[in-house]
Amino acid sequence: MSRLTLLALPLLALALPASAQEVGNSDSADVQVTGRVAPLCILGAPSPAAVDLGQMVSTSGARVGRIAVLPVQTVSLPRSFCNFAGSTLTVAATALTSSAGGTPPGGFARAVNYTAAGSGWASSPTTVSTEALDDGSAATASGTGATQPLPKLADIAVELSQFNVPGDALLLADRYDGIVTVTLGPAAVVQR
Amino acid sequence: MRKHLILAAAPLALVAVPALAQNATGTVDVTGSVAGRCLFTTATDLIPLGELALPGSDSNAGKLDAAVVNAGSAELVGWCNHAAATMDVEATALTNLAPVADGFTNVIDYTAVATATNEATASDTTTVAGAGTASNLGMYTGPIAVTIDDAASANKLLVAGAYTGLIKVTLKPNYTPPSP
Image 1 (tube, helix red, strand yellow):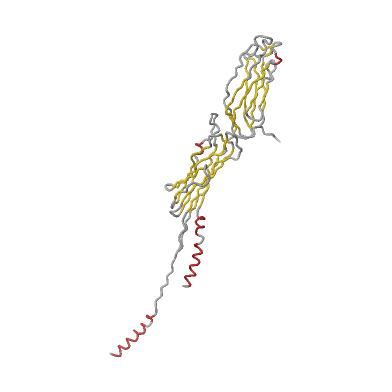
Image 2: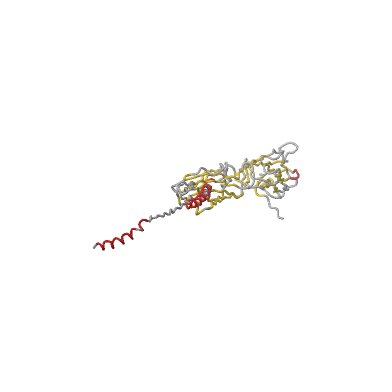
């Protein structure tokens, strides 16, 4: 009888941690899932895609033959975005210049300058003004705005205004073309 | 002749004396037990999904390419030694620590599914915290396939960067052998 008692005690001792043992006999496996998203900037399709200023000079009055007051033109680039922090909006504008090249006669010019301002991205617009000479040279100017500190999804508006002619000269008759290039991209890294 | 009988009886009496002692039988019970147990013999795997955003420049560019995520799969191997065993899954969303802005997200939700061939299927969606409902697995040994489904990111643009998530599959024996 005494031997039975001695045997029972160790068995009870083994039985006590049984519930904890059950938990310990579970097992888990981990599957890590990874992926990446590349930095990306997309500009919405410009609307309108082309801006036609029409007849640019006054045809009567005191300023006949000189540039008229042209209305502000606005181009929208809807739902433009960069999916990373630290992007900038760059606007490069080329003055309207006549198809024919060469030096214009005295008192005439073959270039129309203007100011292009891209807004809706950073804290202030990216503004650039062309400064073409009367012969149409040095027609392109470029400017980069402030850094956008977050990913950004926005409608960008590019406003063309303040059309003017170098020296307020008479404009040579011709077809005039200019171009505005809008670029979204990463902010330049400052070398230290 | 008579004398002979007496001589023969004496040895018989001598043999009968020990027969009066009692036989003793001893028994030894041999017992053992096998605890309920589950074990993964292949306990880790990786699902490298690669680029998660749609390419191109249309209205969906930069949004989640759900097909890429939904094609993710892995295989674990494990066993459970009792019919009461269960399997459950707990999945955490693919996330990116980069800051977000309006129109963007850095979270990709999905449903993870674990399938023990011909035995049990358990799943969990990352939109609800904690593990999904446990599924009866029973006595099983073999592969456990892990797949992904229902990937979604609220139709928002994805913030650039690295995304990581985790799928944890747990096997539980749910059995303790009775004490002898």
